[in-house]
Length: 302
Image (cartoon, rainbow, N blue to C red; front, side, top):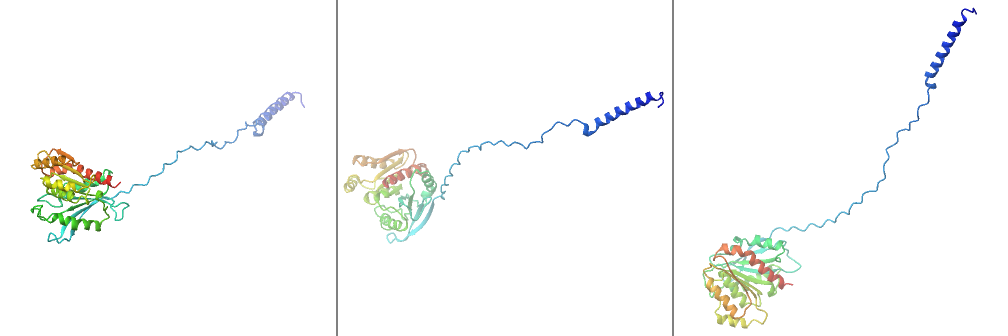
């Protein structure tokens, strides 16, 4: 080779070597192996203990919701007054024809110039329903007879006899009622109170509870009352409730009867309240009346 060209040839070879090394270094196979990146791991599921939940409370049986009580009207045949006798019958909520315990019975009598619907006007159905469903009185039957000929004197009227001989047997044949005297109560307003006291004391073997509300006067003379009381064995005198209003026009005779009972040492409840001889007074105290009857009938059935 010409000596003049040798330096250029060496330079060219050097440049080619450098280029070859550069190309080799840039090739993928010549690159440094990449850092080993681990594959993405699956999300780690922590095994946490299941929360301990309190046991579900036992679901109490829904109490049976009874419909409200009802009042039905019936006709009872009787030969004593010349025509069928009408009665209104209150059946309590959840009334059943075959109860575990037979029902106690309350006979309620209306006043003069009125009829059996008086008690409905005073709110008997709603009041009795409320007291029974609240557990303040036991379920009871309430019998409200109508006295057709209320203008007759109590001494001449056959209503009392019809009640004892026709109404009471009909009730006990038609409904599941307790037949003991402690399970029967009789009460009334005004003239009905007179009937209640008379029938209750004369028939103490039948009625163990008597209520007289706004009594217009004693049905017996003191002498007659004494004789009747002497026929009742000790401890068998019916429970007796007596009340009247301070403005009642019959307050004096009612008070005198109360004093006669005190004189003969007859146990009874006496209430002198605010009010007059009118429906407003009786309606205001109806709940107290029913509560008293119910408490006496309830305790006698235990």
